[in-house]
Image (cartoon, rainbow over all chains, first blue to last red; front, side, top):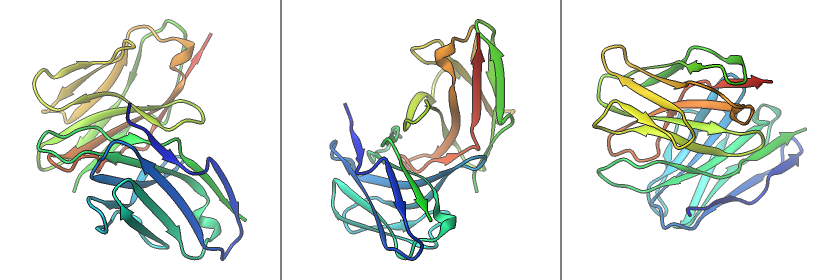
Length: 114
Length: 114
């Protein structure tokens, strides 16, 4: 089974802190994604990466950055956390191919910024 | 640009009743369509997907969805729901060869009551 693991289920951070959210997948997937989930808004794409050291902005990249130094690991960084970044963060991974495949999701990290 | 609209934010229903969760999308090009389910305090799991071929697709737990190109819809149905179907359901689209880069609807909370 594909497994996408997010390092924390719950995090509480203070305003202005630098926050790292880690995601690891074990199926050699090329693509990795960070989504943010908010009630009534569904999931919105923050950043994605289709290869090591490659990244592309999604729909809401402001206030975030990412790092992909190894194929299996994709980190989301909040440079200076703010209260409006309180949310559920979901990591996903998928294969690249001409036949589109599904994305596999981690359990999510619920981040609270106080 | 692509977009997805889930027409109902909450759907309360009694156990063993039928249910339909509505999803409409807009896109100028062909898309792949997905329904994901999120049980309480969990990540997203793929419920079913339409890539090509038969427009009616089914899941292993009795859900089905029909791709209607003329109406740009991908409604999810189940003839008889169970308490265990209580969850949030997300409709999503992606373009050909953009594996995993999903555009989500706002989500529909299905609440099954005894």
